[in-house]
Structure formats: structure tokens, C-alpha cells
Length: 240
Image (tube, rainbow, N blue to C red; front, side, top):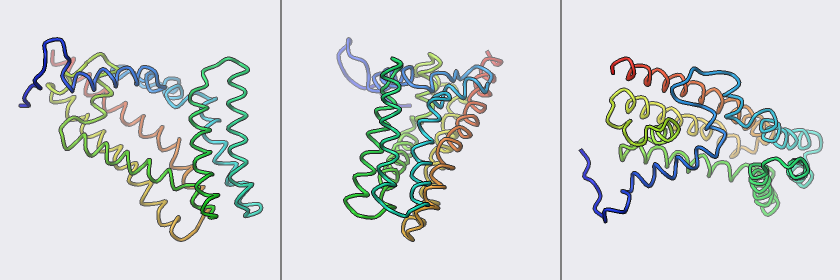
């Protein structure tokens, strides 16, 4: 058992604050389209990865880098072209008055990656920030497992209104730990595949693997997670 944090009666405990923050973030994200207790559907999965427009905005800039670099092997046009495309996507969202935050975040990430590559003069450095993102995700996920608060459990609790009760139900806690480990393996696999390509300057292959291990792998892992979580929720419901 874990001891309850000390504080004033009006203050929420740290786990409750974390759960509340995650619920707010999850409800604002595309993953809110995935309800833990509902049957998986292609439509909800598509919505969780940003819909058709989100897929285009995610995939096209990376594909643009690959195409331009393959054609001329020049650094500047290869990193500038994706940024221009990202700005066009931002402009389209502004004109059509649709939510623009994800497009802006994507453009900023592309700009930062391009900046790193331009400063070093190496095209493969366009992918360096992605390595840090994956590494940070691994640390966060493993850390949540070590303190026995699996991150996927916090997210599924936030989405289902289960708050923190899922920790008290063995089936839900077990699937939360398993799926958190699954996502850890996904981020680790990206680094295991991509880092050797980076260190051997295989830029085209690196660009291809980033595309393949991006949205497709994310969607597949989300689908598996959804199936496992739903099974756990059904088991608990049947036992009640």
C-alpha cells in the first residue's frame, strides 16, 4: 500500500493532481476519440491519429524531405521544403478556421529539426530531435512503471472517468502495466533501428524508417492497446 500524501483538506494529492492534468490533456487530444470500454472502430482510430487531414499533415513533410533529398542530396532544399509545406498547412487551417495548434506544433518541430541540420551541415541531423523525443518518452514510461503508476493507466483512467480506481482493480492495473511496457518497446525499437542508420549517415534509409515507424506503428500500437484495455474493462464489468 502507498501512503497518502500529507496536505490541507482542500488540496488534492499529487496523484489526483496528475490524474486531473492528464484528463484535461487527454480530452483535448485526438486520443480522446478512443474510449477504453468501447469496441475498437476504424473511424475512432482514424480520429485518434488526427483524421485524414492530420495524417496528411504528419506524413507529407517527412515524405517531402525524402523526395527532395533523394533527388538532389542537397541539405538546404531538403529541410526547407518540409517547413514550407508545414506553413502551407498552417495557412489552410487559418483560412478554414479549423483548430491550428497541432499544425503550428508540427511546423515548430520541423523548423527546430531543420535548424539543427543547417547548423551542423549534416542532413541526418534533421532527425536528432526525434531521437531525444523517443528517449524522453522511454524515460517517462519506464519511470511511471518503476513508481507503480503506469502512464497508460493514468490516461485510460482519465478517458474513462475511472480516475485512480483502476489501480485497485488487478485486471486494469495489469493491462496498464503491460501496455505501458508495450509503448516503451515501440519507442525503444525506433531508436534501435534509426540510430545505427544515423551513425552510418544513411539519410534516405533513416527518412524511410521514420515514416514507417511513425504514424503506421503508432496506429498499430494504439489499436493493440485499445483491444487489451477493452478486454480488461469487460473482465472487470463481468466480475461486478
